[in-house]
Image 1 (cartoon, rainbow, N blue to C red):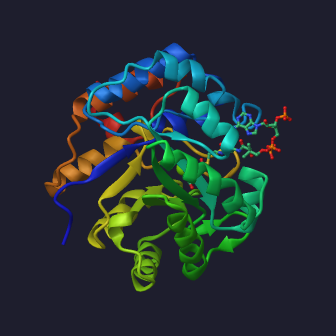
Image 2 (image 1 turned 180 degrees about the vertical axis):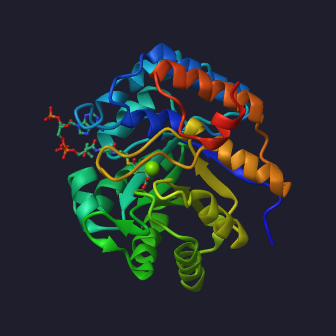
Length: 298
Ligand code: HMG
Ligand code: MG
């Protein structure tokens, strides 16, 4: 059966804006975040404490956190790759972080300047120190279905790497289709491989990019396997600067329309979300790629 309730993990302000050609002013980012919170989203991935030369779009992470209107009942996780990033995040007063690993060797190099093995040495002190400080820690795993340099990624490899992230102390693992090539059968196979290897779906989230228009179909496949945390991006913003073929994430509005149709609870207000994304599209100077935003925005 399907879950009764889905947790929407909103990544637009981070995964979306990290990929914008022009740098979005911090005041616009803050208003976007606050509009999304007002629309009922309760998990807003706010920014990343990564190297500012690697992701200049998010170089304002300190300023953003300092200006954030933290609403009750809303969590604002941030991405942290290493101890330097953790120091910055702790100084900014965050209470929830995410480390982000790669299921493939090539992307570990391109995204983290690391190797598949060395990324764990980088994350280990981050997770240990973050947990000792009382922070919640999510683990992301990229290239779970296909990699632009290595091609198809075997499920056994994804599960092996993903289990290592959970064993470090991540409380949740988000399975990333970084370049949006997955299809529903692959999603079922990967989730079944995790289950067979002793990882329950309660520990798993899904993170689909919509390059090939399969993100919602893939989401349905994951929900049918019992996954109940879904990452999405308001207005379908997004991509990854270190994975050229990636486009935006599953749009939050598309997800909400779909969940409403199934009678699955999520807590968000679709009209308010559409208004927030239409406003953001105006700030960015181009229309939202979300079909639902385009259908509903006046
Ligand atoms: P590096 O160049 O190997 O870093 O980058 P390093 O450890 O050699 O350090 C070099 C210098 O950078 C040092 O300064 C450090 O202090 C500084 P120096 O001593 O030379 O003056 N430095 C930092 N400064 C600020 N903040 C930091 C930091 N770390 C080091 N955190 C590094 C390694 C991991 C830092 C780099 O590769 C990086 O920042 N990568 C981030 C890439 C990224 O953000 N990608 C997008 C997010 S992942 C994604 O989008 C996928 C996801 O959505 C899921 C999916 O779709 O699959 C999550
Ligand atoms: Mg992503």
